[in-house]
Image 1 (cartoon, one colour):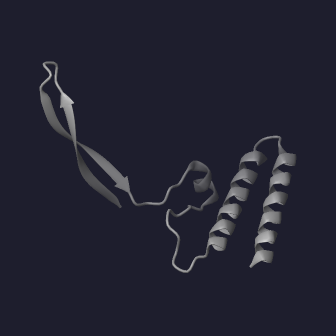
Image 2 (tube, rainbow, N blue to C red):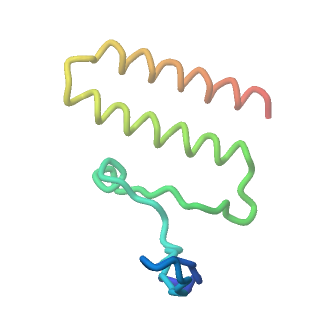
Length: 100
């Protein structure tokens, strides 16, 4: 869904006379999606769902970050860095579970 809005702007012509014009700004309400997220088949919504806790949102972000990094680094030769990051995110996930 797109929302179109007109924004008045002021410009001066070569003789210094003020001209008024309008430019359009299109605002999208669709969730952001980049190439890696499209490949993974998941989008990150811009808003928090009703009943979703901060912990749920953090876990969702950690999971997506972990999968994106794993995909990206699996294409390269940095498997050790990938494994280290996965271990760190798993430790964070476990620590969050202990706190709640």
